[in-house]
Figure 1 (tube, one colour):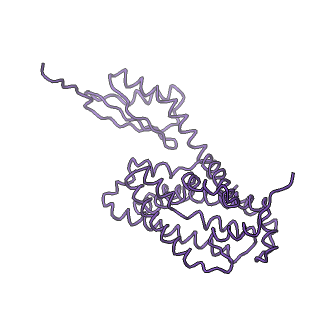
Figure 2: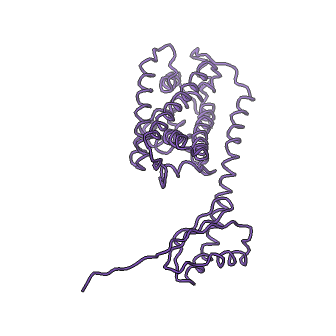
Figure 3: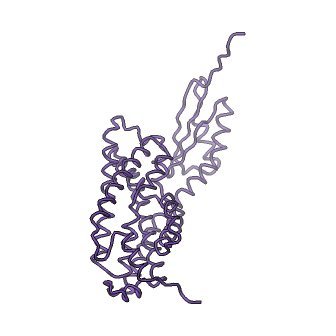
Length: 331
């Protein structure tokens, strides 16, 4: 079966789409890029702060940040160092712009409550290995849409599936509030998505013979060594390591939470109390119980956990004394 290839017109189209036009004035394209990115940053930051999924999705559709990322892969395949450096600088500048917007939004949040219980924040600060798998698949679709003009209509779906701008807003917001671990997690998610796009786009462009066609049309094509490709693969593996650790940690925490949940509930029910929340962070079990006076004994829960083999788990108990009172209407 003959391997698919691209025409010179396809190479020119891809260069134009990725802000790497050959011999054309790209000033208008860059101004459009920065304006759209700034607006997307505002929308994403507003969506994250207000915990609005619909608003965040709108920012994903508007954001053009995937364009220079694909441009980085395009320049990498052609071994065009100048254009690759330019694309990476645009990605870095765009990322810093959106992070700054998130930071400013944090300054406006004088009570530092924008991140508390916010699903848009919590969903982007703990990336897992499955996020890398999803990013690779999404990046593959994006690269395929770049090569094939007849499937370009899928790009809005790709923009929604890949999370680029919202994590940057979360980084700025959490940095301002001093939540450095959360900011690190959001940074890891962003780098995961960028790495996945560059990796998959590189493989797709090589498969479609973009280098050969670019040479035929006289485009600048350098020497692409095996070490360069190995480095791209190595970065993906490097990103996968912390994601694997995070996945393993979350699996252990969920396993522990499921196991100790019934023990906590039995302890509370035996004293006519009710457990309203069970959380596990690392090796710390946090239990919130609600009930009427007198205050329940926490030593009993500690003993029950020890008897069940969880003596190495630290326990924190929050008791809400008072319980729930029912006051029916007269008559």
